[in-house]
Image 1 (cartoon, helix red, strand yellow):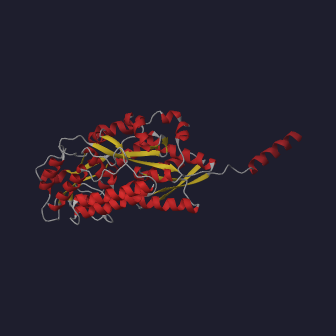
Image 2 (cartoon, rainbow, N blue to C red; image 1 turned 60 degrees about the horizontal axis):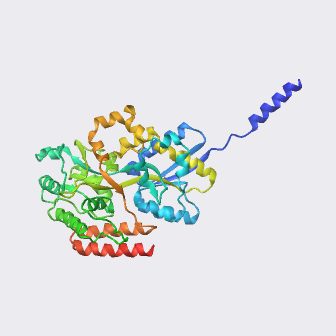
Image 3 (spheres, one colour; image 1 turned 120 degrees about the horizontal axis):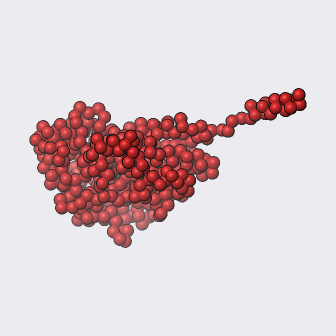
Length: 416
């Protein structure tokens, strides 16, 4: 009887013991319309696959610069999320704020998974040798082509432009000359496409002494080439404030036949279209090999409490699992972070066999997208978009505009 009582009492104690609390994490990401759906898919699968951690993903359609400004303000106010999605353009802002947490130990805690990753792509997320963002995906420039428009103009969509001369010639045949239909749209209100073309032209964002290279001969000629496309009504000049929505809309509607953008735009631009889509690497300056800027999308850990850091680490590691990488690549046309995913037929192997053009995107030589330190990059990118638009619309000459931008860039770098 005594033994029965003891067992009964023990069972009562166990049933009365509360279950271990689930750690709820707050993760923040902008650009919801671009790739928010697949990001939700990744973390929904993570939440369903374990019970210790729950990710609450906050999505909005702000730009990365706007999201960064808000989160940096939240850090100061003491209400920072546990992690935030970043691109290479804003990563340094979090590192220089002192709040970004290195993730080397986090990645090392999953050695089998770490061994599956492409080291070269992972290194895009390092600052001063430390891993400051868990990779989600890396995007390189992509030329999206309206194959139906190409065929109607007597062009071969399977043989898209490879250099500026071929790009301009195709744009001339694809434009109606009245400003209602354009051959190409090949810029963004940030330096991503610009820097890729600048590097491919032999230029640099900064010289060996850290001085701005945006007023160089190669840079001015690049801006003059884009200005020429606008003058001939082969390319629209969209205002920075409306660019992101208008660029996709114009391509999807057939108003623009070629869109040079990030491969991460694949999911967005390929939706709601009534034509066949072709994808190709970035055309470079005549006689030059393409050297592109790589935009790394990943998550910076901002949590400082050890228990929350451990939970955040667990959640962020799910981003580079083979299944997550496969889902992300299929949605974004990005370069696969996880080599195992790329080599497994049921994950990405068969996908690449059916989409060989996407493999060609991955083969583009690249460098990490240049960023200014601290919060200076936000201001620089904003000035770049404004000055580029002034050049495209003819408000200023390319040399004048880029010289002014170089002065702004040097002042911002010196202030940091």
